[in-house]
Length: 207
Image (tube, rainbow, N blue to C red; front, side, top):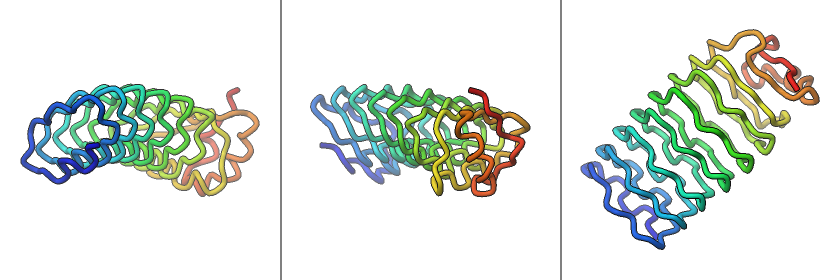
């Protein structure tokens, strides 16, 4: 158990080795603003919520074990992060996961079990292409808000009322036909473009 272990240790520049057997790393390095390199995450860890929140000097993410299920806020505020890790298949929540990762240019693939992507890429100003959003996702609120360079999105999920609010707010590079959605859900997306802060012409029924 290493939840909150080094939270707020602003002078920590190098993380210690994480012992085998740890399962909870929630908020472990949160606010470690001087941390430049992440430790290896051992197999068996299930909770990485807030693990590296606001580690603003962290440039590379560690490998995420297959056991991890919660990545909410995991890399939020990691402004120097240039490469995202592979997301394990058991992950269900990516709420705020990469929010404010302004140096991130490429998003990771989103596995089929993910349900919550609320604010996942909020403010990722360097992101040009979104990952395919799987059918399992039910919450997309603010997901791509202020992703100013985003040009292409594929949504395999149905529209969920009140769960897509401002999903594309500030996405000034989206153009006609740049958001592909399922045919059966297409009419619902068009009905709720105002809630998403989007334009009707951005959407196309592709499959």
